[in-house]
Amino acid sequence: MIVEDEAILSLDLEQMLIDSGHAVVGIAATQKQALLLAETHHPDLALVDLQLSDGPTGIAIARHLATHGRTNVVFMTANSAMLPEDFAGAIGVISKPYVTSGVNAAMAFLQEGVLRPPPVLKKPASLELSKFYSGRWFPPAG
Amino acid sequence: MSMRQSGRMHAHQGFVRAFPALEAMIGGFDSTDMPVVIADARAPGLPIIYTNEAFTTLTGYTAEEAAGRNCRFLQGAGTDPLTVTRIRDAIFAGRPIAADILNYRKDGSPFWNALSLAPVNGEDGRPRFYFSCQLDAGGRRLDLNRLEQDANAMQGEIAAKAQALEISAVAMNQAINEKALLIDELQHRVRNNLQMISAMIGIQIHTLADAPETSALARLHHRVNALCAVHRRLHQPSSPATFDLAEFLSDHVPDVVSAYSDGLVALSITSEPAVLNSASATPLALIFNETVTALLRAMPTGLAGRKLSVELSKSGTAISVTLTGNSGGAPTDDGGSWLKYADHTLIEALVRQAKAAIVWAKIENVIVVEIHIPAEAT
Image (cartoon, rainbow over the protein chains, first blue to last red):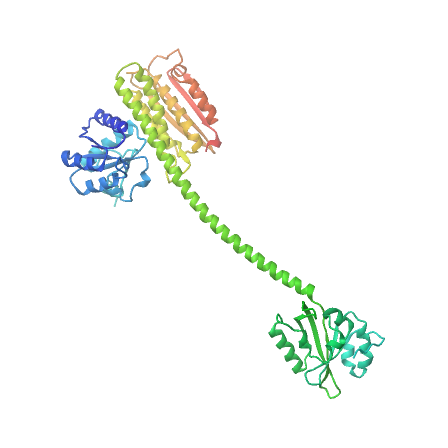
């Protein structure tokens, strides 16, 4: 699912995801819509912008989804400095402005990480992992 | 009381030792410019028995007015009691003393009196007279005062400057923080806007599907995406105003390769960290985008053995990047592949802006493009 309040961005992102073989269960522009969408469809992944049409609710959405249900969160933001230290329980962040190849590489990696962890693919530069997931998927040797 | 006599006293020490010759010596004081006072050490209250003209000039008191009074009459409200005590102690101990004491003239105006006071012993060895000379120490005292005032003023000034400095440091920190916030906000907006532009072009390409315009739109999309790649990194908190060309190349070149090839072009990127200033980032990013795009478009599709290599090397602060496009075994394109597929107007304008140099050569099925980046871009 896509949580983004800019219609053009969500449209473009949806097309990118469909083109690379993913199914998009829906697009949400607010916290309420996002949580409803997650409860209804239980998607594997939510791509969440920080700033939504009801305010900077992206972090609260991530915190909720991290502890309820099965949906994993990856932020998509132009202001990753605003993220809390623990990424609010999210797997990581894709920095804006992203491009198709970066999103595709991140999605391929996340698909492995979410469905058959740990991922075998090399982590793409377009995706920054949270400390928790970085340690979980790439434990330090020894 | 005035005992005007002729004769000149050259040194009062002589007088001190020559008590029997007091009368004769006094004559010398009358004409000296040094104010002199003599008090009777044996009379109660140590009354003044002699003052000279210079004393009158200094204090405004005539000899008659001063006579019979204790020297204390020159003191006033501003006189330092500690100095008075010191002088009194010296008198009682029969010791000579020198002190700067604040005295007052008859008109009430204060003056600094550089007092020298010594007992003149009688034949019994005890003080018979007190001899003192006074000097208007105004100048000296004034200097001390001025020094003190200057020191105080300077201290005040230093304190004020320190405070001002502290205030401006706080203000500067605040300004720096505000500036950082402003830059963050600006960058945030630039990134969002670039994302919007990229998305709009992406949607348009999708809508047009296989229409002929899509290839032009795709080239525009990659130009915008090159800017996206620059701005994802630029002004991140960790590296406020620099741009790593090597990072950009390893990020953006595969992106272009995947878009312009059928997945059969072998790509190799050899580089080392090459940090550029942010002003050079955009033109250089676009130059590389155009060059890589042109090299890929010059390759005939479908052929095996196609290769693109990007090699970044540094010589001192100057950076050179060599891009080599090998079309595999394809017959050479006599139209001059590079010339045909590169947007020269755009590349030349960008090369000028970046003060870079670009040279290219075509040898059979290999096109080599060298881009030289001046040291001033780093």
